[in-house]
Length: 83
Image (cartoon, rainbow, N blue to C red; front, side):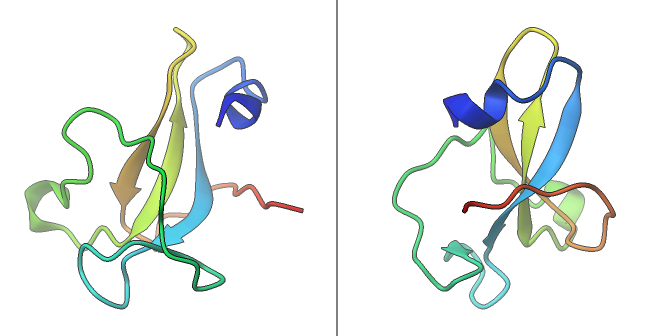
């Protein structure tokens, strides 16, 4: 995540390819690999206000912090891919 955090200098949210769309709370990468390491922000994941937040975005903030947040998968934003 240090590499990803270094890509941005302004506030930015980008999809990282992580979802619990199959089973709530069972986070997997889009290739089916289970989640083993997390970088959740404070009080995340939270499905805020009972919303259907099954995808994960990387939150970069101007103070240099970079954390994960669960969000609705229908929100249009950029994404990052692993090569």
